[in-house]
Amino acid sequence: MPAETIGRTELTDVRYEHGGDDHVFVELAEEMSFDANFRAMAITQQIRERNLDGINEICPANASYLIQFDPETLHPDALIEELRELEESVELTDYRWDTRVIEIPVLYEDPWTEEALMDFRERHQDPDSTDLEYSARINGYESVEAFIEAHSGQPHMVTMMGFVPGLPFAFQMVPRDRQIEVPKYVAPRTHTPSRAIGYGGAFTAIYPVPGAGGYQLFGRTPVEVLDVEQELPGFEESLVFLDPGDIIKFRQIDREEYDAIRERVEAGTYEYTYEQTEFVPGEFFERPYEYNRELVEALE
Image 1 (cartoon, helix red, strand yellow):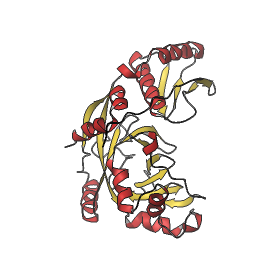
Image 2 (cartoon, rainbow, N blue to C red; image 1 turned 180 degrees about the horizontal axis):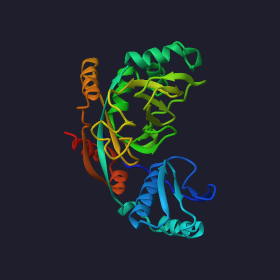
Image 3 (cartoon, one colour; image 1 turned 180 degrees about the vertical axis):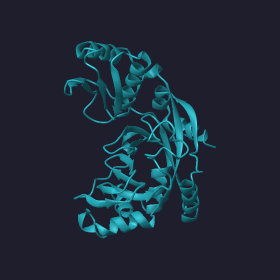
Image 4 (cartoon, rainbow, N blue to C red; image 1 turned 45 degrees about the horizontal axis):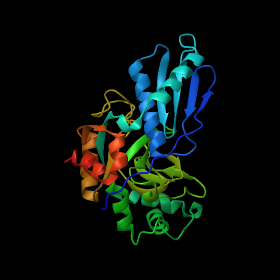
């Protein structure tokens, strides 16, 4: 892979909005980009480190973030002034944060998502193709196998936790012109298996529970991303395992390994494979593929 940099996006017109009496929503850009997401990560991390009285919850989300606060302790105007100061002071070239590189095993073309997608072909753009066949074709890949290699070959960063508890959205860490892009179903499904790996727009999602959905279905992971009882290893501190800023490396597995991992999960003995590391946006922008390789090597 030749040396390649990721172009930087100039962010303008940052928008601050009140959400009722106790929320402030900040939109850093109208479209998702690495610049916007990394800036949201950096700003929200700085807010946590400043430990301001009155802030109850901080949620980075793609190119924006949301803060829930106590207006009796922290006036919204004072909070917005603090946020504006942070926005001006954060410089991604020099910034870094602690994160995890996490391995997520995936059985691509599994029988459970295969059954679901076949049940809803009339709601799909191409009823005669599977989701993987369709996604491979419209992205210019010669085979499903080549497409799977592209999806699993480079890591993804968790950019937000989604509209149901424990649902991570992840953006692949490659230059924008190398991003896989696929549309959602024409009409949503009424059923998607839990732990399904879906893809919509330029985002991978992991469905934590069964339910409706519209993302193209690629496979299924045997590991949980949500444990409401907090009984599984890795969930002692939170109902959800993944956090914004985590880096996912999908690893293709076969059915035999899927079943073996699933048995360990159900027995409560499976532990995620992950490594603590430091993410440096400036280095990623300068040499994305080399930097990705160094990140993933931590898992080995």
